[in-house]
Image (cartoon, rainbow, N blue to C red; front, side, top):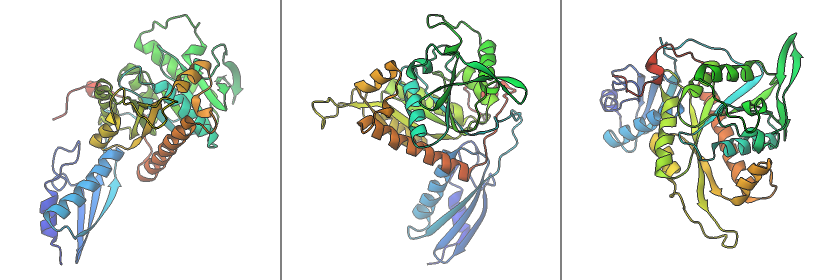
Length: 377
């Protein structure tokens, strides 16, 4: 069997890459097609670092060639990412010493995002990584409670002649939260610019030292705080937390879409399904899908992003968070095993992202395009 290059190019004209508008041949994404008997090599150039778009393009090419040309064709796809200049972006700065910055987000409140963040952090630390947590949920900070440091106050330290905040340490995790600077009963009633200024101080006026991972616990939704964080920091990737419930999934989809905006371009490392099912202690073989079954897993598949794992409803997770000792610290427990698997997936997706994509750069959105819900023509 001999493959025809012109037929392959014609077949590839049926594929459109997300965000390009034109088919991959017309847009110039296909830079070369080489055939050797029953083998074909397609060289593809993409202008977005989004991991799910890269994977979708590769899968589409293989499927199209197998469907339209020959099911026996041996297809190889070489993908190169070349960032396109974006007039809506002004490059920002990184924090020296911090290797990976992971934003943990949710479209909806109450899905357990902060609990997942805390347990990811302690599991990463148990694996030997140096970890920090920035509690960016200005109006509802949870980390001081979850790490049993409610009454702690950051002290000042001098670094290179400059005064810096020293993060609070608990379970080998460095933590900063607006909760350290307000009374437990005090409401934070700030407008966006003031909240953004407080976040910048916790980011750049702190002595974070050397970190393998900084986890950022974002507030629910897709608002001002999220944009402020992405303007300030080069986010390595985002993890989205959702329950299987349809209402939560609708908002989680918006959360993923925010990171995929052309002006933001933060790779989505994957989706975690929290409160996936309930198993009574006395009936260990039973699973009750209280909020629906595999909703977040199916959403991840639909959006072409990795599914990082599911966390069951277990009473000890809530109790551990309330008592300030994240449940993943419970040795030889089901929860320890669950979070070890999820955390390994997060680390693997981070490694994959760093091997295949250029470093994300902090952005400054200079037009309303960055926060528009409307699709570009």
